Image 1 (cartoon, rainbow, N blue to C red):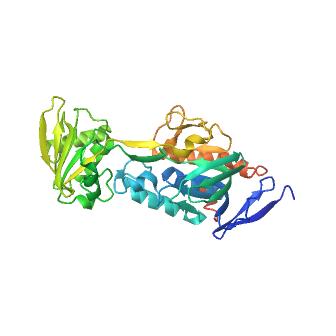
Image 2 (image 1 turned 60 degrees about the vertical axis):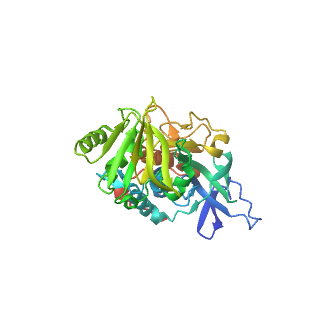
Length: 368
């Protein structure tokens, strides 16, 4: 039967074809959820979602796997209401709205997703990979796209006494999921990067007061954001406290009432507030990905720029986790990388079928 394609039933959600040279998955253990597909995409953030769309446009079946319980990656988990300004054709779009649009874009392809679990194991070679998840799923795929962003992530927490109690009550938060939660509240934001500056600007129209504290009078944010910050400070919309760092927390029963700030010479200043938002970046971890034999550089995966293929043939990386000379960590670059990876994967899945590139305006969206 070589040279022909045969259909293999994976689970009840989708059917998938495999080349005759690919070993059949072991279906003798019904208790093990088994999925057969062309492309396994690890990570369901913006880059992973758009990679799924590009695979669909090339009639490549794929499956999305993500450790979070929802799609969207950092856009959904960290800043669903934060505007993003560098998405083509969108002067501004909130993170959550972008994810909703990407989800609608892949809807015609009926892409299965395994959420709330992470890929623990990956073995095999180009054209025949086997992945295992923390929930016991087994995925068989011809190729793999890693779109895991920065890997597993969590906030860098300030070393303050009693921090846990204020985190549990919401007095100290590291992500803003709903701006309305800070309505008529006094908010202190700590940090000097884009997140600190952007959220200070975003919350000034919602909170009763917003103050921004940083250890030095130099912020690492976009020039336009810094211009807006200076204007907001001049108008009295945002208070800026320079030369101080977080020193202590005050409150009762987990309810935050104020924060002590201190200079390097230990001059202490008290600021009354209802919420503290420390934006000191994320602690990231590649997790099991680091054990798969891929070349890595400082928590990223080097790839060939023209294909986004990693050091292991058949395994590709897109989005923030991918690196190469001239790489820009922008969502739009992750979109481009997803398209390049999908086109590079097509001959792996369909080695005997030439890919004749067509514009979407002429070919439309193929049936899933």
